Image (cartoon, rainbow, N blue to C red):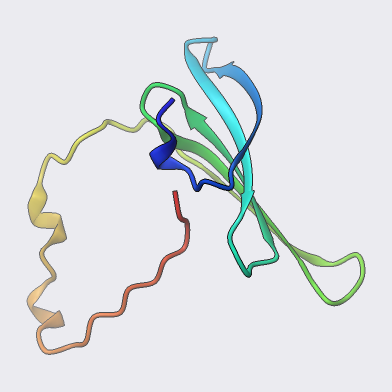
Length: 104
């Protein structure tokens, strides 16, 4: 599996199959520098695309924190309509702000 879709710090934790044993997946765990959050990514081995992500972030209060999960299904690779990346006219004159949530 190409490593460019995961950070260098990702640790391979398991392999398996989903969806009637038709989709081979790999599971990785990683943290980003300076972040207390631990991410777990289950990645389609062929497409190098996350099919499930979970994140667990501790907190200063004991026995508390955040846990989130994201599942992705029924995805078709490719871009059918590149115009979706053209901002609507209502955005003209606004400053662009880029927020990175997940880094692969």
